Length: 188
Image (cartoon, rainbow, N blue to C red; front, side, top):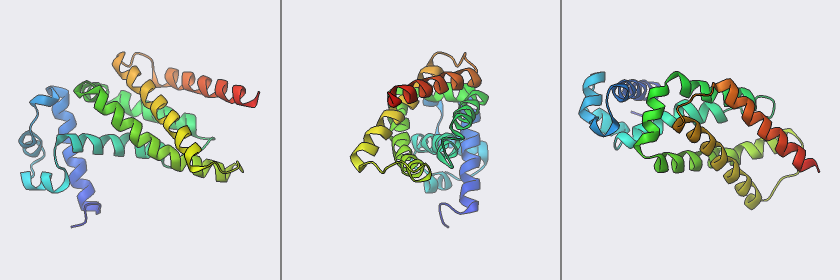
């Protein structure tokens, strides 16, 4: 079976749902692979076919629910909608994402930053081509992607750690203001 077939994706999604439900009820360190497999009624071998451990399942959830939808089709025209959607997704499952950040915010931050940076390199390439911006060197693109990857993940993690008290719309407006200020500074 292909690990990205529709059947495999359904199985991974089923495990992710069970894992999220369990994390809403008890701490991550108290959840076992057996708990996950029992909850979604699959064999342990099936879990290990798709994931090495709970951390890899958590990574898959973050990648598939947050990062890929955020980066897919990202453009200057839709970037604020993308930010708001990302924050709304997290806010809709507040307890899960707060628990995920508490697991080890350093590891989550590193993962989010690394994944965001990799995605931003592609976004920069696409935005440059669509907006007739002179191509940057790979080194410059990496620096810009790293800046935004760490910055965005830092802002989002800080929001989660503060209890997600600001609405997704409020935080999106603050991010939009920050980007507008950066644009004005760049034009000087």
